[in-house]
Length: 228
Picture 1 (cartoon, rainbow, N blue to C red):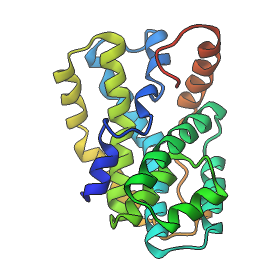
Picture 2 (cartoon, rainbow, N blue to C red; picture 1 turned 180 degrees about the horizontal axis):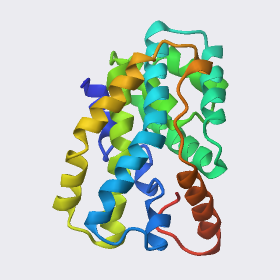
Picture 3 (cartoon, rainbow, N blue to C red; picture 1 turned 90 degrees about the vertical axis):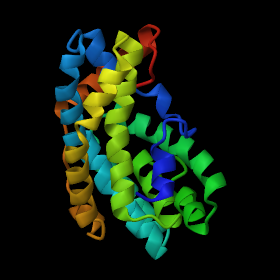
């Protein structure tokens, strides 16, 4: 994997991902996950839905950034990802992380491509921003897709440790055993990176959408550890 993608997938990168649980907090609040044995199914399901959608758009953005597309293309990608994200809470979480990633990423990899992206989408979706950063840094669509696919499971996994006090060694073992699925998701995303944005795949999970909306309501009513 390209070094830029590794940096962006690192939990220490200051993109704001540490305040998002990927739906895990709401699942824990409903007592749907209590033990380490409950985690693999949730993470695998999230990877194949929200994670695959993120990977598709990260790969497309890396491809676009490497080609130096007209800035209007970024608006198209933004609209198409919005259309595939029915939950307002999910869209807001994605844009919050995208904006945080943009602030740090522009310092690390300054580029007129990023300036053009942010001129038309000041609060970009996270996969679009991360993919663009990988592209301007010289990484491939596969690199970008792998980075966001990994973040789709590593973020909730880290949240599980914090929320439930799970054994971090065991939780990381769960993530490691998803490596084959992660690779497959990234490869499928990279294969369509150059397609018309309107024709990109649209994997989704109504359950995650509903959990995100519920978490958003509860977050306004009571103290929660994570923003999403």
